[in-house]
Length: 430
Image (cartoon, helix red, strand yellow):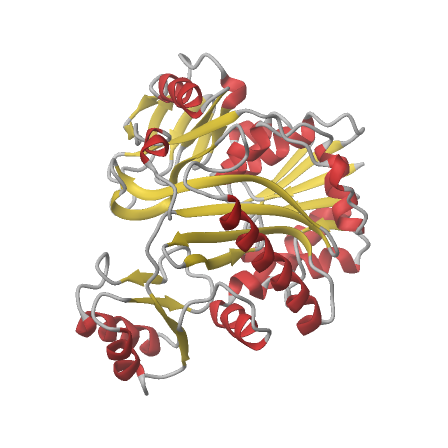
């Protein structure tokens, strides 16, 4: 079996590694916009192409006689890469373009929830112009709104009251900027509480859950500073999280199940791929923040580090619509993932700075992100550079191992030492 990994970040590094370790006979290939040094060691061939360039990716897939494609980033899904690959008989982990709207259009998802009366959605309105914006902001009240640009904006399209927007005037100005740039947008009620990620394998009928993960997007210790792509994340040995109750889990399960059923009814097709729900546990219950239609980064690093099965076979069965729950197994271990990022990240990162992993003791638990290999010299290009995953019987043990290892990565880098340590301070909501 010839397997194509689409993408070249740390997410795709662990996808490639987990496929590489599969007992199913295979050869690996990669299409990504940079040469990831970790992936390069695992694949038979590697093409540096833009993953959203569907013609180039398809050309390589046909040249390499690919049987199975695993799509990492969201942008190729928005463009319809899964549709193109499947038209040529290539099994694909990733939903088709119209199903991927669950991630690529926030308005589509909120409207879907409203139309099918799915619980877990905050008060919201969709806007194509500034008409009614001021009124709705005032209706929600000062400090109680979130503005979300519709469509993919690389994590820079969401502004939250109190964090990015200090008053209604600033919120209106951001909406005005979106309209001027041709963007539509959603304004939502602000939700307060701990957030969590719950990913599932979906074969069109069944939703098979993975362990819960909590991601920390803020750049600095104590969940302060600007949002990032994710500075790290943790999961617990019982596959839940310290602040979640059985009632919370059931509420999130119901939301996911109803969403997939509504999506199938709306689009006339089954969803096959990864369903990643980003939820928040509020005093009033569980709410959906947003859906992603692929593996999250860093969450996938936690999850696949403790995956206990044949990942290639799981991907094949998922793409074919025949995935059995017993094929999906995870070890009862805790994980903590920490990212080393360039000084100045995310607003003004230093770029093209050398780094070294020579002192790292467990390189099999280290994953490359925005790193180039220049004739043996590793260079951090400016975004999240290197992630390590600590694994242990408890979050405390996993955190200690992750911290020791991330400190062995040398360069103009910093990391958040409190990732995983915050878990013990979170209490269950009443």
